[in-house]
Image 1 (cartoon, rainbow, N blue to C red):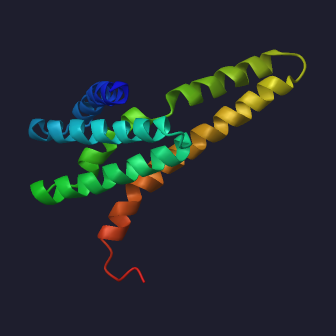
Image 2 (tube, rainbow, N blue to C red):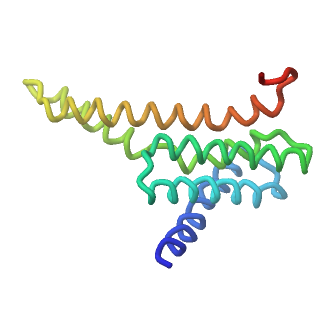
Length: 155
């Protein structure tokens, strides 16, 4: 029961930035609920996979791929571009905390007179995690479109 409440809470609070960024990107009003649904589903899937101890990079990749498939369905239904829904929907999964911790550790590292192995390890760890999560978002979001809109068979 706690997991269900956690997922519903996650869905609610991840749909808010999805709608906010959709408004920033001038998405028409009638499409905002679809951006909210895609953002809520994507972030909730990632939270569910993280609950079952999947690494955040792979969980983000799978969630972004699900958002990609979902937004293709929305695009076919409304005759709109899939990215109109998808970009706003993946914004809540941007790794802001890891990027922030990378920059803070970099600033602390440059402020010190001698190199600290702990700070260096923190910069490398958080920086790589940020890069891999961003890569998982972009590849996961693009992959369904690349497979669906192919003109030739995959095999």
